Length: 148
Image (cartoon, rainbow, N blue to C red; front, side, top):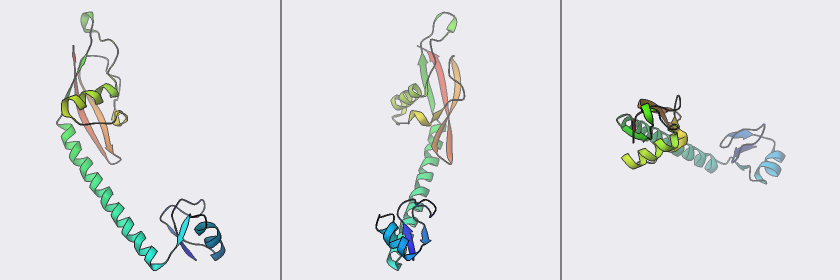
């Protein structure tokens, strides 16, 4: 009996896989517990259409991420930090603060977890931060730190 898995099943396969199982296991375990559906021609066609749609959506998301990466690389993010005598800074600039400044300056909401700093920003100057927009797309953002 062929079954299309609707969830990951240990030792059988992942969601969306078409697996060959014994009739009893297919009817009494997989289909009864809604872990799979019988692989009828209609169900196989629906699966194929769903996979095509998911691939199209993934391609669109990748294209959007690439376009946004070009936009991000043209940005000059201006961050101000409190300094004391001799230009020493108080504390450091975190990815959360960078995300807030980007929202104020450019109106774009960026998740702080997607901003990757090679090292903590603890002094004045210009720095680069990586922004993970997609598993395949990473943009470099310029950050200029000046005193308040």
